[in-house]
Image (cartoon, rainbow, N blue to C red):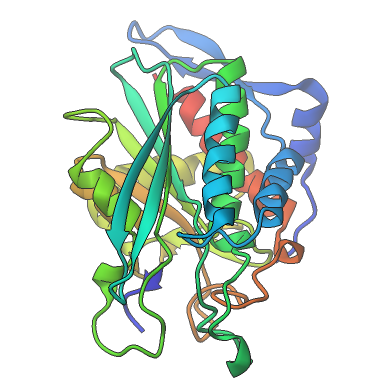
Length: 330
């Protein structure tokens, strides 16, 4: 994704306690204002990490390559294995240089019969060129995209595993958007914001269900690098401040306020823009770094965006927060 304007931590005692008991219970209120206990599944960060590693091991997920096609099939199979009704939305889209590439949006529907729904999303493709690599010789090379793409997908695959075992009150749709990261490289001047997020743009105009609606949407992007934080992204705040409040308050209750920082970050062109345009109030949980030149993690859009830079604590903080929000929703 493109930015518009120009802490490795040990696992907490909380997560250890959750692992030992297999879940946690929180109080919520039903429509009659009667308190009831809701069992929140325990998110397994190691499982999410393995999902990230499996994606990276399949090769560069650049649209039009065999690794891209094979990964699309694997993602669809995994979601089916976890009990989802899966739709693969196929199309051909034109990228910044006029090249046409195949697009596969993987759409996993859990309890599709339920009218009250939550939308979760991430992009699964990886960037075709490492245009921010410090070594100029690497800048035409594709990247592994361990954090930029695979980390969010890994978290959602682990959440999908729980959705298939213990259904929440809400219906849940997980969309793995394609061709998000094929935007114009750094050396092409001008406003290239419309060259990004092509999969979500396609879905926004041609949703998998006519008249699709969800109560809210949460996008995950770059959620695995150690030492970085999640700020309240500008467009998320503009379109869905109440959802940011819900998620950030949940993170604080769980003990993750050091990474879910309750202050404003930058404005990001990302898939949540088109989720909002489709009528779903959506936020972007994305790592930002106000101290770096790019505004993102050090390995962003370089050949060093590899599995070695993925932190299970960060995956666990995001995963446990999101899964708690889902299961508390009534």
